[in-house]
Length: 90
Image 1 (cartoon, rainbow, N blue to C red):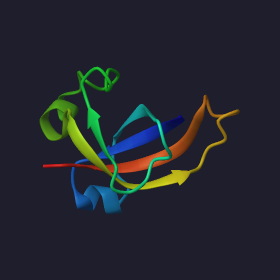
Image 2 (image 1 turned 30 degrees about the horizontal axis):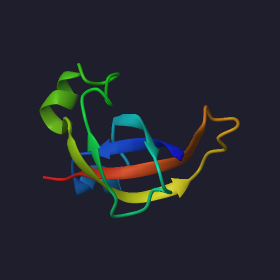
Image 3 (image 1 turned 60 degrees about the vertical axis):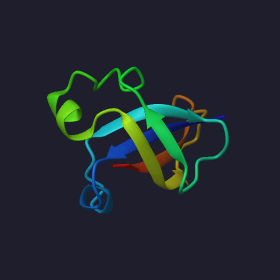
């Protein structure tokens, strides 16, 4: 299992500029890779679920992994190993 920081992006401009404001903690059973689709629920986004911008522009739904990089040492980064960039599926 791979505990990951998953950045949630609403469009390609935001993704390419790496300017997303929201991320969640997500655990993948296998190494995350481009093309994987994850379903984000309000429960998973508990820390941001009350944010008006989250509700209006992002929200729960399916997000597709654009890239995933093994950037963290789980022993020193609260168990995190991957940084994952996703894009909301419309």
